[in-house]
Image (cartoon, rainbow, N blue to C red; front, side, top):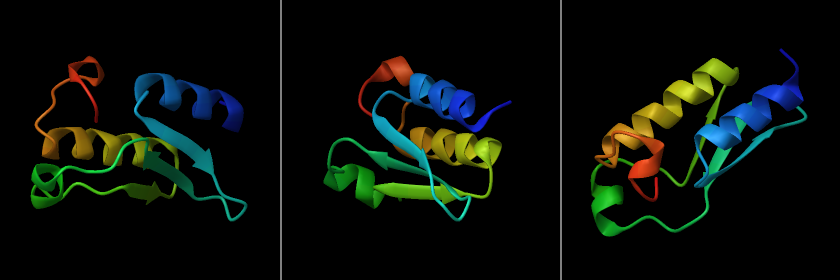
Length: 77
């Protein structure tokens, strides 16, 4: 799958994040909104990165779990 398609799919799956791939080939995601105190206390991060698209998806799922969300539609990630 192409980089652009992966970027588009991940962005669609996680609309509360900006998704990109660095020139060095790392995959990144940054939240659109600041973390709440509760999210910080739960170990949530403003920006995450991974080696590949699947790794980033796993990091995003982990962030959703830490925030106590079960689906992308459940509110701000």
